[in-house]
Amino acid sequence: DNTAGGLQATRHLLRLGRKRIAYFGSSSDRWPEFQARCSGYERALREAGIEPDPRLSVEAQSSEQAGHEAATGLLDSGVPFDAIFAASDLIAMGAIGALRDHGRSVPGDVAVVGFDDISMATWAAPPLTTMRQPLADMAALGVRLLVGDPHVGAGDQRRGDQQQHRAGDAREHHPARQRRATAPPPEDRRDRSQQRQQIDPWQPEARPEAELPGGDREG
Image 1 (cartoon, rainbow, N blue to C red):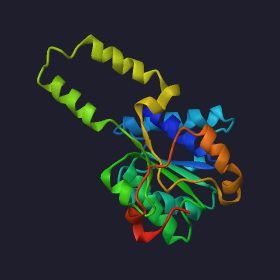
Image 2 (cartoon, rainbow, N blue to C red):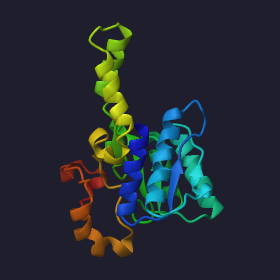
Image 3 (spheres, rainbow, N blue to C red):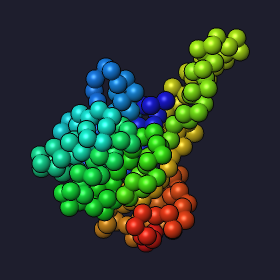
Image 4 (cartoon, one colour):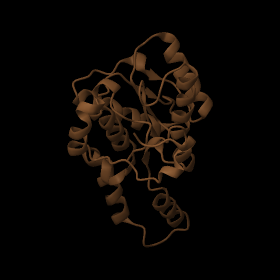
């Protein structure tokens, strides 16, 4: 459920204290999953009493170059923002590169969340917080449908419909990988650390210190 994933990702950024959250993704009909993720993003903002700012919705197709160009354009526009929800991990990683090129720190100045949990997300610098899709289950169901498995029927359709309508419980269907690309704004980090542990269902993914890029340690 892409709407649920967008909702959960944006709620995560809001819980961290981010208020000016940009969305990077395509509005083209060729990318209906991006449109659904944007719908979840807008719903989360409105739930928090924040009206989506159209200047923070930036066109980007699923590539690192598109993410880099989207972030560069937003930075050049002068429109303030403190977080990015990217419709794909590739977009997110490109955006992080542009932020770094412009002297912005991640997550200090700008927190970033991607979508899909591709393998490269773990080794991005910093490691990317992302929404994980059940790709193996989705692929298995696709194969069963393709070969005409008689055991795929109304029950599978009902379960899919239930997922589409349970956006308020997005975490069940989109387990999150919280890595070092998201954190509260620097001025709020100490005050909010204990509170975040109590109210935020996302927990940082445990990774050995030796695996962190550049030998950095969690601080």
